[in-house]
Amino acid sequence: MSVSRDMILKLYKALMRESSKFPAYNYRMYFIRRTQEKFHSNKNVSSPDEIQQLYNAGLVELELLKRQVFISQMFKPEKLIIETQKQTDKDTG
Amino acid sequence: MSLILKAPKNFNLSSHFFLITRSLTSKSPPINGPLKTKDDIKPSKVMSAMGELSGKPLYLDAQATTPIDPRVLDAMLPYLTNAYGNPHSRTHAYGWESEKAVEEARKEIAELINCDPKEIIFTSGATESNNIAVKGVARFYKEKKKHVITTQTEHKCVLDSCRILEGEGFDVTYLPVGSNGIISLEDLEKAITPNTSLVSIMTINNEIGVKQPVKEIGAICRSKKVFFHTDAAQAVGKIPLDVNEINADLVSISGHKVYGPKGVGALFVRRRPRVRLEPIQNGGGQERGMRSGTVPTPLAVGLGAACRIANAEMEADQAWTKKLCDRLLSRLTAELPQVIRNGDPEETYHGCVNLSFAFVEGESLLMALKDVALSSGSACTSASLEPSYVLRAIGADEDLAHSSIRFGIGRFTTLEEVDYTADKCIYHVKRLREMSPLWEMFQEGIDLKSIKWSQH
Image (cartoon, rainbow over all chains, first blue to last red; front, side, top):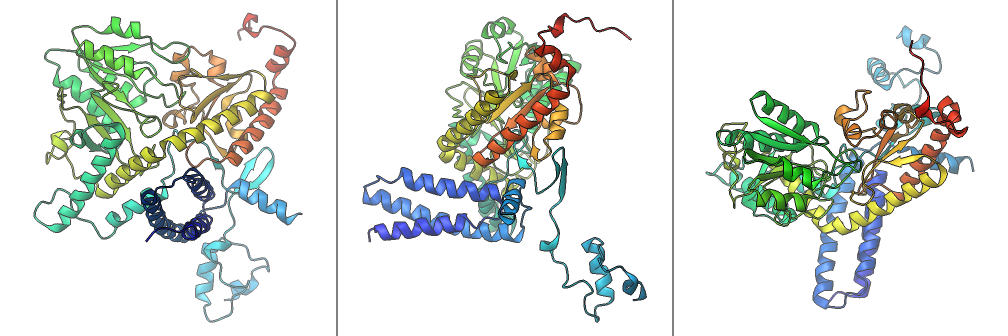
């Protein structure tokens, strides 16, 4: 079975969604950035075997992120100063 | 009960005490709304010159330690929970399972520095690795050779090990460094005598980020048949490092500087030509007898995973730290005159930016920058107000050595954090300079060095 464009898009969205769930600012930003970068740099891969390999690696990473987000959410870190400042900016208008 | 009823309406004790009072009156309804949970605890307040701020400071101290990568933690967790066997147990499946994981980790570390897995020895960290390498090799060859060479800018653990060796009757040469922080290869060649057993020079300096020419140093050491040890705690996983290319005989690796767990490190000990050393820790003969003691499986697995990830992400990490480093430098130098970068600007690791802000005392700037976690030098010496010996070794004037700040940028640092830090830094340096009479005199064109300060 070959990997369709649709499946890749779905994987990308799932990875982005999972990355954005990290409660710790630095992990969240890193995984969002790297997911974007990785998909972007592999945009022109055409060999079906390689696509399959990358797709499988993406699925493994998705499972990993789900576990780690779950663990992180149990031990929530304090918000960073730049996050709380952004919040107060929003609150005050 | 009566005490609680008398309590003022805005009953505001710590949540801990609140829990106790509530449990005493568990049948009555809560006085001030629902029971306090962990989420209700307000973030700690941080005082700064700009007023009270809430939230955790930003982390820009990647040379002291790095946060553990979630992918590393994910690899470790099975060995912290269900797979608890002793990796040295040869008689049952629990042991085999752990042994397999430890050997896999050894392979991952070996791949990163391009050596044989058998040449990797697990230790408790780079400090132990450095101790084993420096003391171990010097002591093993002491009958024939009693001379060790190192540099003035090494990490404390190498310098202190050398001091111990001096007490045991060894000769130690501490090579000076130039104003850019790099040693002179001629000095090194001149310092090597037939009596020299070991040269120990770090790859990347922990305070100023300078890269030593390890490849050339390795070639000199090999041609003179002297063992070459390099403390690569700050380099492994950050820059490409091939032990065969640099001809290193011993390499120290740290776990928590490559987004791995704390409490684990490794030492590469070459097998051909064979490096022999006297172990510091004796016992069950694990790790080829060089470091006895049960290998901590979860930590070893964590170090392995950290090295595997560093190998895969090196290009991306390097590009990112370079981008952030350039951003920080360009923003600071555009707004502030008299900012001096300590160490060579070319031969450097971009994740470590050591700057001196002239006419501003480093410690007072650190105090003002409470909302950013920074350091004036190495974490080991951050408790003292003495200027760093590394900065003094590169010939920085006393006043500039006192005004240094180290910005540590890593994999998880963001652009937003760098911008915030730069803004805060610019604001506080300007503010502190305005208060400084020296800054005023400098602006009037008075050469401060020509002034004879009166003696009291």
